[in-house]
Length: 70
Image (tube, rainbow, N blue to C red; front, side):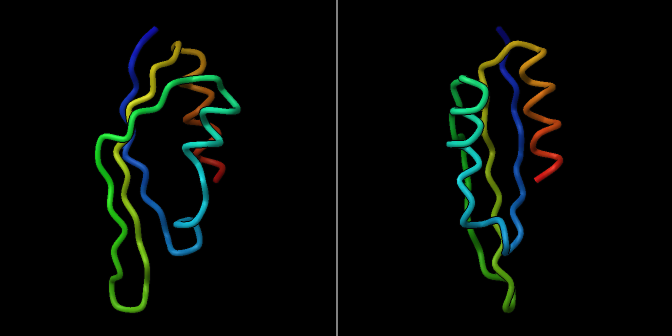
């Protein structure tokens, strides 16, 4: 089992979504939040989250593909 680090960038429509919970439930993996913030740039809310996922290579690829569709 390996560790996958991802930086998730959220736009205003995605900030309130529970992507971490969905990843954990859908793929049965451990997710650690390493850092994150939500900021307001002008009138736009943006977010950034650095996570580390403990998963097999196959699950890691599936998670990346799932996130790309979000």
